[in-house]
Length: 412
Ligand SMILES: N=CN[C@@H](CCC(=O)O)C(=O)O
Ligand SMILES: [Zn+2]
Image (cartoon, rainbow, N blue to C red; front, top):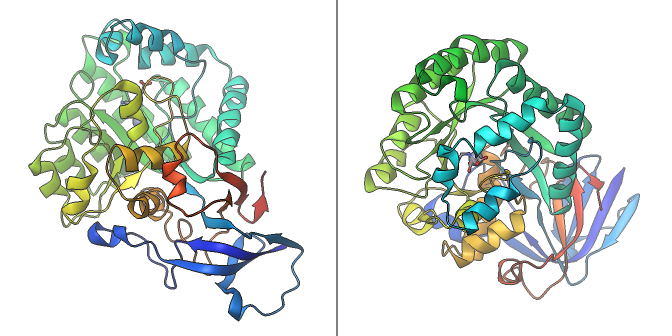
């Protein structure tokens, strides 16, 4: 199967060499080609260039992209899309004055989702999650990370991870899996948190390591959840099974989690709504990607990640949705890119770099995804006819996507 896309008004994120990350000042540059063509064979980008260089090519399918922009599909490096039911009642409770922390303290929040998930059959959980995955793919997401963390028992965490494995098998999207057993302290361990950490370390991690059900290890490193000592023990235990850290840190408080993650060579540190100069310093000269989740800040009315401070310090930044039932019931990367420009004061070029190549980096996938490069996977968004790529973040809430191609297949 081959596809020729011709007369592309502008082809974005064009890279002659296979770069895997964009940092600091370089994030302001988004290389593009005007009036371009692109050829896909099977699931791979095999050629692209200006229309003036185009030589006749017999493709199985030809798409005329006149007036339209083509860019790599979004790379969403932080989601919790495997969950059961929803938490719309807590949404209303928050409107009526309760905070996210208040709800968690009275046994709601993550524990509420865990209770529902434990009672949900594996097939039902798969069906609910597949629906969400298909929905975000229609919105242009072609690579996605999915976490466990609403099981909180050995059995229920494994159930979540098996569901992710099934999604991986049945979907065209590239999927990476993260074990987040340390997402909240279950009710039964309320006064014996260390015992739960022991369970994570002695039972869950070895079980998951043996069955190779996860790529990454995550911890919600936050006051009232897991402290630095818990986090370090869990990261060390994960490391023994080859699970690389990607952790939730600095959502509400900054207390050294970023430096700890860097010490353990975390692939990413995610949230970062609260950042100190020490946190920024810790990230310098590291291989850890900072990840901002602006839809979470929007939904919870908490501070936005200081993207300017991070990028202006010469660091890279990735953008992701955090799609989950409690803090971000949205998996729309287009909204994330808009919000990053509007609220985090990122330029459209920075936001698109953050949501494509840097998002791919934060999933260990940037060798194959996140830019227009010969030999990379053909995951593409073709927009409707638009004036410029600035319109993508500018027209927030609009769906400007015409066609999505994932691994060389047109999915809508
Ligand atoms: N903060 C921790 N975990 C999720 C929210 C989980 C929930 O509220 O269900 C997050 O990344 O925002
Ligand atoms: Zn999260």
